[in-house]
Every structure is written in structure tokens, then in C-alpha cells.
Amino acid sequence: MTPSQAKTEIEKLRKELNYHSYRYYVLDDPEISDAVYDRMFRKLQALEEKFPELVTPDSPTQRVGAEPVEEFETIQ
Image (cartoon, rainbow, N blue to C red; front, side, top):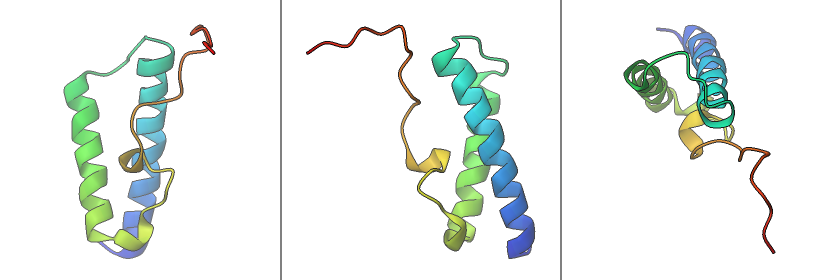
């Protein structure tokens, strides 16, 4: 796989993983199983390990979870 092909695949995986994370964490309405999500995540990890120059701070591999649900109350 060339760096250009890797970049395209990484961008696609990030978009899909972000979409599914939002559905899971925010909407509480997942469309795919955890196993399918985990396979996509591991594929992204492998590509980023092979092409570390393509890792970005906003990648799903660089953060934990998602934004909190707006219904959560703020406590001082």
C-alpha cells in the first residue's frame, strides 16, 4: 500500500469510526456491533503504525470515548 492509498483508507476509517462513536456514545443507538467497530479500529491502528506520519491528534486512536451527552447536568 502506498502512502497515498493509506491516507485515503485512514481518512475513510476515521470518518466511519467517528460516525459510529457518535451513534454509540451520544445517541445510544449503535448501528454496528462492538466486534465490527473493534476490527475497524484495529485496522486504523495498524495503518497508523505503518504510516506514523499520517497520525493526527483528532484520530480515534488518539482519544478516549466521545463528547459527553448534553443531557448530563453540570455540577460545580
